[in-house]
Length: 165
Picture 1 (cartoon, rainbow, N blue to C red):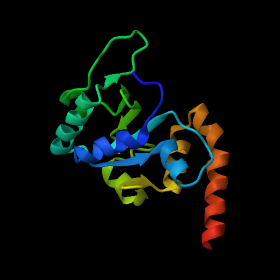
Picture 2: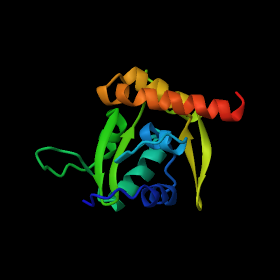
Picture 3: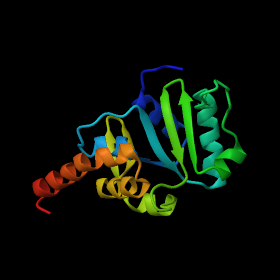
């Protein structure tokens, strides 16, 4: 798999397959102006059967396999997409983390409602609001999330000050 993430190409491929998704996590924070780096693309996907089928077609084109320290090449399938909450995948365009929910059981309806459209060149993406990214990282409470929270909170504070709110 390619070690250099190519998120733009990955997002274009998802769009070409009609996959309904919202960009979340550190990528959403970066798109909101947070000065940080991420090495994977995190998305929450619509869990309906039609979207899962489109997602499986996109993952096949991406040659996606689950990240596995033993080096096994486990491929995503319909059963896994329907039942597992989190999918850490390696693709030919970089790491892709697919989630059914984030934070405190924030699934597709909640994530979609707290997202907004962001224009990225010729592509329009749904991206989770920075406040919701912060809430999900607080809920996950992992060491790496706790380390990022001061930066994310300051980014949100500066955005609000700039926007007058």
